[in-house]
Amino acid sequence: MSTKILHIQNKQRPNPLSIVNLQDFDYLEGEVVSANIILENPNISLYCLDFQNQRAIFVETPLEIDFVTSPFFHQFQYENAQRLIAVPLQELTHIVADLEGQIQNLVMIYAVGRCGSTLLSQVFNQLDTVVSLS
Image (cartoon, rainbow, N blue to C red; front, side, top):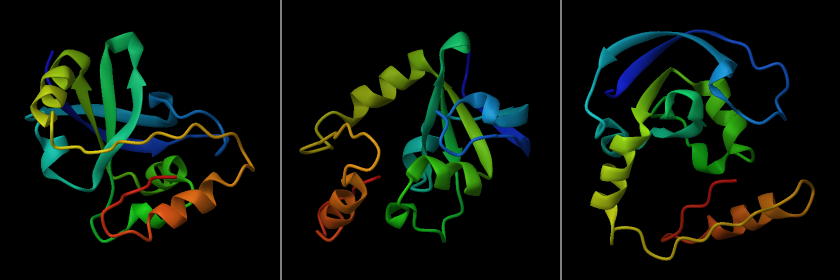
């Protein structure tokens, strides 16, 4: 299995608050690309995992749009998705191994709705050395 572009034909997410998944899109499988595409483009981000096909699904959004300021990152991804990139989980483990040591102080916050996590994310984003995704 190799990394492939998935060309979006239609978006069909009925509830913006639902958990994201590959079924949010109708797509056609396209050309094979290098898995490194996800590292080379800052406008490509992880959308969901496709466990059935053992793939990580990334979404590509326009470069000119700043996703960091979006209060609901997953909704921003869906609304602005231009195409999807399907990376086999096996390839993803090699990419992550190559990144070892490049990411410092990763903090993940689990939050329930209406708890102030969007405000906390905006506060973190005031620092030049931090990227916080809500």
